Length: 411
Length: 145
Image 1 (cartoon, rainbow over the protein chains, first blue to last red):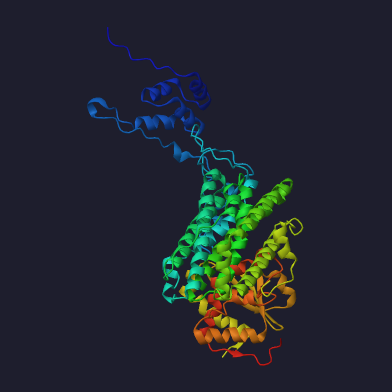
Image 2: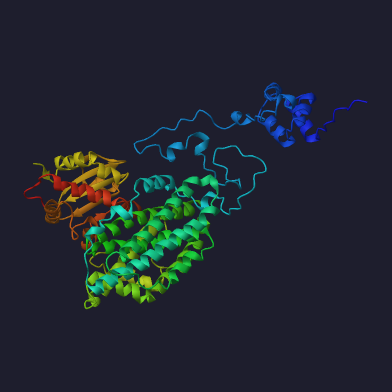
């Protein structure tokens, strides 16, 4: 008795889908015999592959056996992907920017991203792809209208500490000055590395539908690394060395943030405002061209972090006004821990010596340090005002004192 | 010899930076920047890799700008003379240093967010003014304070 061909069972779900798609039973049997998976066949049907097209694909397969191994099974269903086609993003004066790609559906930034995978915005999802497990999928939790533009700006305005800073302009400084700048650089390098680390930790939590924000924050990670590198280089290039690490009380408000908006408010609005003013004063009191440019270039990068932070804060407050008190609480905590860092006498004294020029004139330098603190508070309040937060009355008491003092020389 | 301040002077600097690879390598710079010298006001438009325009404006136009730079005519003169002498600003005459030195600040704005463009693009703006070292400048006689 001749062997009868093995029968192929057609799953009910496949049969139902085939009935709708117009695939006959013999075609199903042939596809299954050739190793086609029911789930894949259903997907092809849902993407509009006709019975004739399926037969054509099968006909292109080799028979195998005596003629040799069967040709690889081709799957060209991806060529009929039902996404928006015919897109032609055009370069602008700024080149072909990430924002120029936001055409048609590719520019639809949803209020909620419903996919838990690496699905690029505008691509076709595949059922069954494992989830990424990220936790942020609402636009108001991370969005800033300037994110795409800031990304391009960050990419365009990259610079290289190794070769763009005129290190050859460094000349020996008196011991107290060299120790002061080295302590300052130890602090700034540590702070910058922390910022890079924490942003990097949040990146995998941000869903893929908001790639403008993810891309921009990737540049902020890179900039934190650049600043960590920059200041370490200054400390180790003029006969000095590193100093004492920071006590890091203010760092805790950043590392302990449980919510992305909390992190952004504390790090990219509060902390970065205070850091940027440190860079401003570092540039003003720089002893050489290397230090002047070093602080100026770092200042540019940090100003971008602040721009993102403020724009995100404002976006949240405009779309979720119920989060206002929540944000104020984040700032309460952030300000309290920032003030705790004022107990870091090493950094304060180092700045004072750097400003005044010598240990002997540290008293003058401490006055300039106070002036710097007034400017930090003033700029912080002005920026919060733009984001629709009037913080003057709720400011942490130790900072409010600076807001009430008369304008100093560099208010 | 272009006179400072004047559209002609700013156009001369524009011509320099728009043909300066070192300026373009600093990256894109997008801002509307004012320059106030006594009673005279000018607007510089920076877009992408170029300074695309310079024109004279009035006080009422300040609100449309991201920020403006304001100091006395004497201080402007001193800054530009130092730049000419040294080929660029020395440590005491950078834009940021002047901003910290002047009681009312050098970079001013009606908008705290837009004013931050002064910091974000500071090196490009510094390069713009440092480029004035390449031209001879006549200072306007009697520019009022």
